[in-house]
Length: 105
Image (cartoon, rainbow, N blue to C red; front, side, top):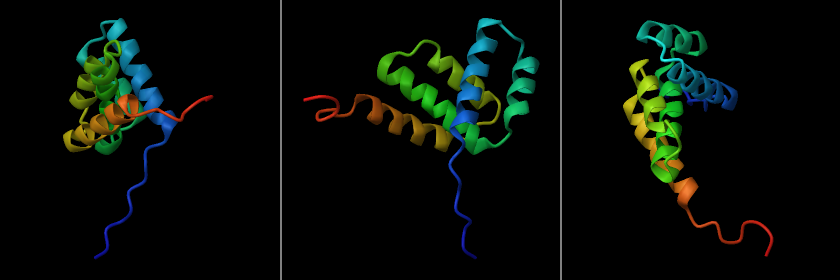
């Protein structure tokens, strides 16, 4: 049996997850509220893991405010830890990699 190709999460979904998690943190929302609002966007563990990894990678690369807490919230909602770790590493590489040749000479 051939595995189905996995689709990349829609960028708007990832942005909504990040924004929602950050708002819920600012509002000091309780766990049930956090889960309900995140589940309204998705329950897909791969999507949650991707969003968590992006936030965690940005935190690790540039200490982006609350990135670690955003990641934790999305993982609490059921994010896939392997996907998170892979995405976090890719995000760190993307944000800290060699950028020579980019921009005006």
